[in-house]
Length: 118
Length: 155
Image (tube, rainbow over all chains, first blue to last red):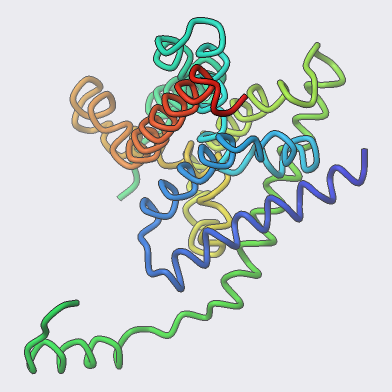
């Protein structure tokens, strides 16, 4: 249990440092940085490397935005194994629906609850 | 940078001279600590879902992500996340709470333009690129991988 928290901290923090380096040294905008990280998550899962990272670091791998790329790739591949190439389209959002739905629902509730500042 | 005229070069050196020197090391330490802390909170939520609901280590990621975005809604609404972002940089932008913050802050900000054109039209203004590049990359990779598996190149 406790080692999990430690590795979540280290791995999650390290992914954020990679993002910070892309922004500071690579001079990318935050949007470019996040897009690059999402694409790398998908690439890592294509080579089967993201799943072991989740087993190892838990939330340290599922909370950074790279897991979004991994989840898209994962859903697409799961369905593709069952239904062939069409599964890539039908399975794309299968695993990641929680994140997107939550963002839309809480975004809307947030807009209902809070007033814009300034 | 293929060809630069003399004036362009002098402008470039002027920009570099006045560019704020970024404290890369300190920024990275801040990003590491804040990003790591957010992941510890995420881990606590994950453990909660594994203990009290029927999720496994692999599947608990999804409800955890949704819960973290729920937290991000309040932090964004009360203006805490913006201040955290100024301090932590990528440490608050890279975790999924940063994605939530981008969606929610855009939704709140454009509320004055009405719910359909403002909130609905602008919600994914900032976060859209993440979804689009993620989906397109996953589409390309999954298609290639499926074809490779189909033709027996990889398994």
